[in-house]
Image 1 (cartoon, rainbow, N blue to C red):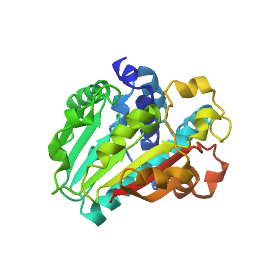
Image 2: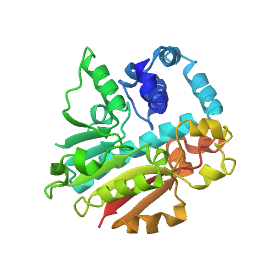
Image 3: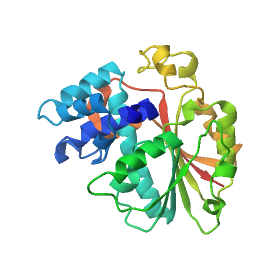
Image 4: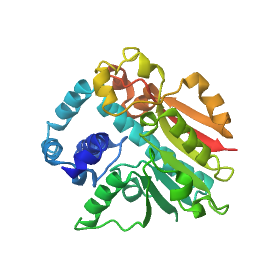
Length: 293
């Protein structure tokens, strides 16, 4: 099916969001609700999501997924919640009037979150994923009302400078850039070009992105959560990582300052409390916030 072919990881992340959204409000109090996720699932994954709506089955499915994918289910839920909160607080606290989502996949953050202020919304993603996403949203009975500027870019073969409108860089914008889930799939030269592009935004622009500890690229058994085989890891094209100790220096090279670098144990604890220590952990993922100087 087109949705699954467009992005395997985007489809599974949509499944994770659909499962947690089938829980009672009291059971997802420290997570989120995504009413759109289930519409992005191919038939096989949609069946799993439908089963998760049965009382008592939801947490069993979640546990099976977490065991099968070495902690990916709970890690992705906690990371999604963390970035949701970081986005909302940053927009509120710093007067952000432009939100740019790089590699949003099938997550409809702009539609499912209440930002309580007027913001220009932009999504920049691969044309195949973006076309599939827009097609699904256009066929919903109740269509989202938020206006989004969609910009299609193939990060591997196109230059942002020639495909992204220059008006996004204008001085009157206070910009927040969110770049989730794509850094590890890039080669080092392409990652370099993207960070160079981000550095061109006005001073005060904030960037949220995730990355993997570079050790996982060469020593897959170094972390809990990499008990899965290197073959499975490379199905998502893991090319780029960074040592946490080098992140501050890395960002300084692009005229950026590191504000936060959060490890998975921290954001998992925030969502799951004491039970977080009993869960398989995807230890190599980290969430960063940086600011353009």
